[in-house]
Structures are given as C-alpha cells and as structure tokens.
Image 1 (cartoon, rainbow, N blue to C red):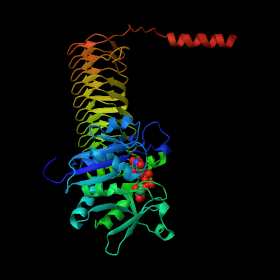
Image 2: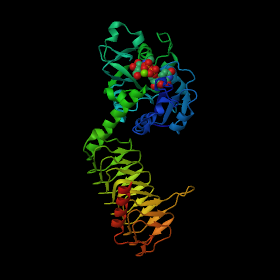
Image 3: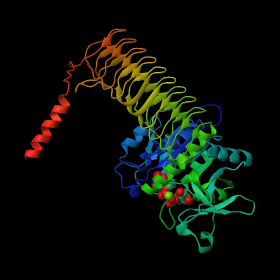
Image 4: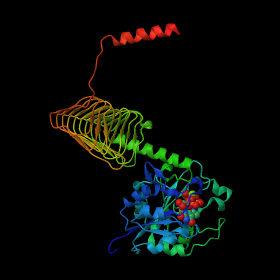
Length: 451
Ligand code: UD1
Ligand code: MG
C-alpha cells in the first residue's frame, strides 16, 4: 500500500474452545446462521482495512478456508494474547508511521462496526497512541481491570490472577479489543515478557511498556452485550438470543411488523421490506428476501427464498432454497416449495409439494398436488402454464408441461404434456350400482346375528 493511513486487523482465534466440546473450532459455530468469526470479519470489513489476519491454532484447516481470502497466521503454542498478535506480524501489510492496527476476538460475534469506529474516533480526537475498549460487566471476575490515571489516561491493566484485593473491586474491565498505531504496537510487542501469574505473554502489558516510553493509552467504552464472548454452548445460546434481539429490533425500525418478536427467528441476512407482516413463530434460514406488504403466517419456515410484494405465505408453509413467490401469490398450509417459481397471483393453498417447477401467472394448484420431480437418479422440471387449473390430488410426473389455461382433472397421474386450453385426465371409469350399499349392510347384519 502507498499513500494514506492503512488499517490492519488481527483477529485472535487460536483458542481450541475445549468447553464447547466440539470437533470444530469454536469460532466456526454459528450465530443467526453465520459463523462467529464471519460476524467479526463483517464488522472489521466495514472499516475497509487493507489487510485482515486471523490467528489460528495448529490443525484448523476449516478455519483457514472459512476466512479466505484473508490469510491466517498459525500460532503454534498458545502462549498468550501478545504472542498471538506477534504470530500475525509477518503477514501485516504496509505498516507505516501513520497506519493503525486493530485487535479483535473471533469468539465475539456481537461487536459492531459503530463501536470499532468509536475507537478510531477516540484515537483521532485524543491523539492517543493506543485505545482500549472498556466495559462494565455485571461480574468482573476473570477480566483485566482498567487502572485509570487522574488525567483520564490509562495507567495499566491488571489481570485477575495478578490483581490485589483492592484492584479486584474495580468494575471497569478491558473487553479485549485494542486499536493503536501499528508501528508503536509492533515495537512494544517485542518487549513483552511472561513474568506474571499465568506465565503468558500479555497484550495488556502494552499499556505499561508504552507509558515507559511516553506512549499514551486511553479507553473507549461500550455496552456489555457487544463484547460478550462465547466459550460454551450456553454462552453460544446467549449470544444467539442477543443477536436475535438486535435483528428483530432492526427489522421493526425498518417498518416490519413482528406481531410477537420473541418468537420470530431471523437470519443474519434476512431482508424484510417495510410493511411486511410476520406472524408469531416464523423461522427464517439464510438467504430470504421478502418485499413490501407480504405477509408470513405462523409456523412457516423459509430458507433461500424470495417473496414478492403482497404475497401471502402460510400458515405452516415451507419455502426451500430457490423458491420465488410472485406478487400476490399464495402458498398455504402444508405446502412445500423448492427451486420453483410461482408467478404473480398463482395459488398453491393446501397440502402440496412443488419442486423444480414453474407455475404461470394466476395458475391454481389444487390440494394434494405433487410434482414428481425425482426418479431416483435425477431431477426433472414441471412447467405449469399461466391460468392452468390443476385438480386436487394430482401427480405431475416430470418432465412434463401443462399448457396455459389447461385443466387437469382431480386425481390424475399426468405423464405426458397437456396442451394449452386442453383437459388432461387419467381416471378409471366410475361405476354406480343402485342400492348396493343398502344390500351390503343388510347382508352383514344377518351374518352377525347368526354367529
Ligand atoms: C483477555 C485479557 C483480559 C480481558 C479479556 C477479555 C490478556 C492478557 N487478558 O483475558 O484483560 O479482560 O481477555 O475477554 O490479554 N488467544 C489466542 N492465543 C493465545 C491466547 C489467547 O489466540 O495464546 C485468543 C483466544 O482464542 C481468545 C482471546 O485471544 O479469543 C482471548 O484469550 P483468553 O484466553 O480468553 O484471554 P483472557 O484470559 O480471557
Ligand atoms: Mg477469555
């Protein structure tokens, strides 16, 4: 990089996360459908960094894959937070006198770009060399305590294990996030030793080491929720809850009605337009977009689906990836749709499976219609024309085409194309025998009396 100030970001993620009791690295566990480290990357990327380096432990190939194209630095041994940043140093880009270095944690999915920008603001306005993100946890046990000087600058951070009884009473703690001049930080890191209770290389030592050479540290504060870290499954559930609250609040601020917000589960990327109404108990998997005025009724599950203006989905509908529901179209109870387009005004109101199909404008799909899209080897397409009427309990054996405005009689199994305006019907001849039911009952009654 040449020219203006650069920003390098280092995300610490070398912890194995033993308390998760998981085969996969901790930071790959998901919150709102996205890996925790990906949430952190999103916040970092909003600051337009020139380089992000993720510090991983040995044997975490999945993690390297997940954060690509950003590079990973392997910390061979977990010797402490300062050692972890040192492991990333050779990969940093364009570190100059004016560039900054930001340290984040991969297991803190709730951090926001706004809070990171506040760190940048504080550094700029105060002229400090290092800005540390402070917070006040309800229980400070385990956190590094912030030791503030009279003039408001930061004098030191003392770890729980090294703290005196009096220092342990301090409620302001370091959240673990740090922004500083990159050159200053890298030089100071060289001097960090492990002469402490945990025999670890502490990043917090940069406060003290900096002060000794006239480098000023300050703090910037944020709310507890943003810096809640995840170390166990129950903390993962807690982070999920906080993230859901944030996503629901954001949706409502944008004009979405959530009738009972606590029962609606959103994905990190759910896009709901203004005047969308979401009824209680609806679940959004990743990749859903719902346009203005559409309504999603209770107990529906949507994933990878687009819903156009004023469409009505559910109750009890399932939209799987590749579903496109057109304007004012309707998908009713116990209807599953996959990789299919329903054009404007089309209706599939009851008990159907529509897979790998196109359903033309205004077509009506009767109750119990099934597109038989899979023959055990491959998937095949069903094409249902505009204005077509598919009678109830029809099996459409794909590949098959039903023409525009055609009618398919109820109970048919359709294996050949039905042209436009034609009637397609497969049905055994119906026989009616007068009085046969009455005779049958009389017979049964008589044989019962004999026995
Ligand atoms: C650290 C801070 C503490 C702060 C707290 C906030 C130090 C010395 N202490 O303590 O002041 O209040 O975080 O949560 O920095 N990591 C590595 N490699 C290592 C060690 C850690 O990558 O060798 C990563 C971990 O995966 C984790 C993060 O750094 O994401 C913090 O490590 P952790 O062991 O949780 O530090 P704490 O003791 O909690
Ligand atoms: Mg910790």
